[in-house]
Image (tube, rainbow, N blue to C red; front, side, top):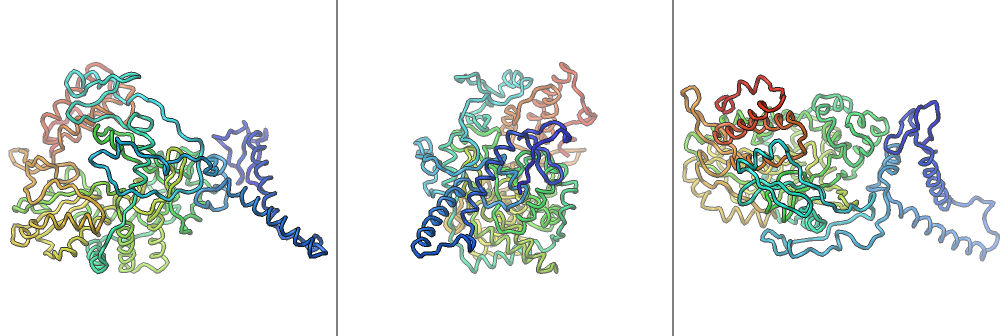
Length: 626
């Protein structure tokens, strides 16, 4: 029996496909849609009948007639199988109400077109670029396509009309004439430009290149990896688990504050995460997903952001839209763990949740005031190149932590299962094609920053084991946030010997891990250094109340460049003021940066009727620096 019903007058206005009515465990749709669905169900019923074993009354009397009937039924079964395979459901959705709803809205069809990303030839603009990665492999493509192929079109860049005139007059931005309108970009030798879906920087060629480089085949030493796992378990032993129920998750403040975020591939037809999570059909769907071993499914789209023009011309960044069924699965096991990880940021290497006001404490935590030298490294394209073996090692770390904390085998298995859903994952691309990716880290994870930080803790401990580098925790101090790694080294002979082994470390990262690293500091003092030390911040001295303190400082040019190219269109002076206030909050210890943004905000207050918070009236450069 179908779960769809057509609308009747007692149910109110006739619903549409975009807004179906869910009532009494049935979806009420308009009459035209119901007729189409009835035809589909009829065809499926006929196909299923062809698999039915005939009753005794239908059996043939003679051997020749029986063979003819068998050949006929074999042909019918082949035809039925061909029909069923022509309309596949991605990833084998469980057969429940929510799955039927997704089939209606997403309209999957067989991949019957000859041209796709795997057959696309890469142009010279990519293959001749200095950062081109020649180690390419065609990804595994699933035989299904969703909706219609996307056609590229021109769209104007996003801008703040109130800020544009100010930015142009103060030399912060330039306007570039294009075939259709003008494009605003920040000033500088490598300006920031707006990048997003359907802009001139996002082509299918770049998408094809990104998918082909989404793999990694590391060559890890087993004994060193085991040592790294044990070391990571010891580092995070103070972080506790506390699994939650479904109801606790969707009613928690942390879930509700992001309820309007992307509902993901399985949230088609819903605009609110809480509305989707409280739907009985979705709840059953999520339970089946959590109990299965199926990989998570993510929507993939180009990230809308200001990006350096040199990077935009090569490869813009991708965003993986959150999978809500996977988010709830992760939250049930890791939400409390994630909160405890932030609370334990001064007893573990992870600095998740560190605010700007605590960077002075970070400076002393890493003992830079005691003449310790710094190593500042981040890993290039780590979301694409994160090895599956490292992700598996992190899962083993989580399971050992849970066992050490006395959790039951059932709870430990739930934690491992929740983490393994994204060890490999499906990506639904903007053109409707679907790929199965077996390495890397998707961006749309709830446990993304925390899990990635632990991934890099495993990598860091592995590198130390391979280099046979063992030091006292007070002589070598690590701080990590995702792929950002800040290490402080005591001024002794062991540290000097370690700093002479840069080429060995770089070779291990490249050959064993299959990744590459960008080095900002190597054995240098981070105070007043021109390169960022950690999370795009450097350290500088500042006098507050006749007392000199060490405070963080953002790179002036970079922040101002991002300031003039907004993520989304700004339509009112109030929106422009509120956006500028967020940037002003980051201007501590930066006189030039503070004066420019403050001048623009004051001009808005004088020219328009803008609501100004008391916080802004009392704000000074010193108050922002404290």
